[in-house]
Image (tube, rainbow, N blue to C red; front, side, top):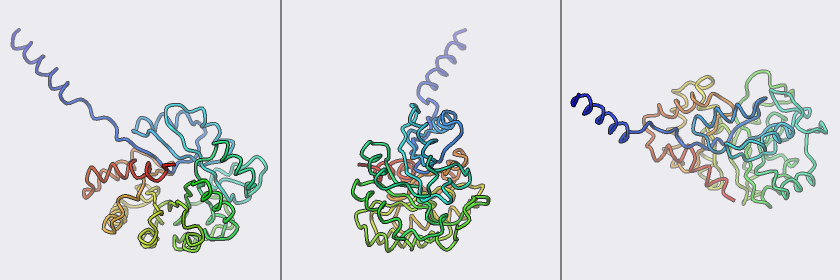
Length: 284
């Protein structure tokens, strides 16, 4: 009996000393809408997500304002090909327009309903990210110190955007925009994907430019070896303070596993990637 009690006490002590590991603290900067926002947020919360940046159709996005278990930042998606969100093909705005009225946009900013501009769909629309059609919105973003997230790289099938142009996915197209709006905070979505070296070159020249690892960290889209090569290139360039976590609605458990499989990442670097860099970037 004494032996049993001793073993029981020892087991209790070990359990108390080594509690189960809690999920990693995560800020997902690249998320889109779901038909069931509550279920989506619940799954993310279980994975350790405490904050997300959501961009989708304006009506669907407004349903996220009732989500309480995860802090939500609200984006403005534009320009919308044929007035629709790529892939889901729901109307971006109730008016059916491709572009939101700039006066309406400014009022939404003043009302606290827009935290950032993104996803900027210039490539899906078939124009450069430095096209002057975008300048009135960039001007508003700079005026109110709102971050801007721009799609780069490629695209999946069946996106429903007839004017999509692969050549418009180069991060170097941002050069002219950055020259016109030097105070603008910009993040390159997907880290440029196949153009990741261009992203690195642009970030080295512009300290206000960040990137997110959505898509490239998804093993269902990009092979793990390629993701490892890209991440190593960013770290070797000294950019560990400006890369951010994002899923683009991919399986978050797989994305986390991809990051954890990178043997060259220190715990400090993981914390920067998972949430610290994003907190710095989105700080008002």
